[in-house]
Image (cartoon, rainbow, N blue to C red; front, top):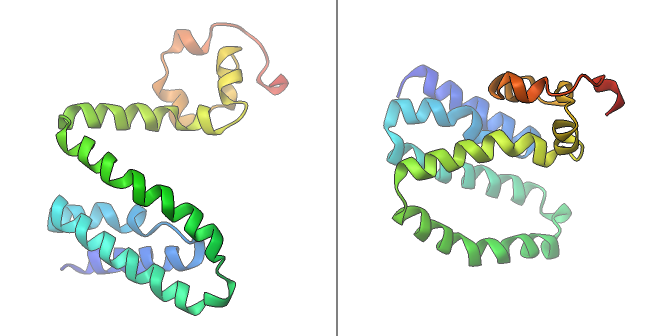
Length: 148
């Protein structure tokens, strides 16, 4: 393993301990480039699980078991079905679907995002998303973005 991969794993672990997420986000691309997709995903899941267990044991008194079980139950039920469906889909279909979901993330998560886009007020959109939307859709109406 190269020094860059080790540094990425350390930074990912640090991000997960501080924010509660971010391990795979930071070290995933480096591990995939260095180890290949299948091995890297397995390693990311293993290391992320270890970090989560260590953090949970340190903060066990503050853990809300009922809330954890409410989150765990649907995941245990849905994950095998989603894994089976994804395994049987074409890779290109899954890639396009992931891209569409990524592009729609901001308008769907931002409670005003869809409304602003429909009213022709794209200035409220994320700059990265705005760069991907065709210009005619963005300049449909000339309404000041501050009113959104």
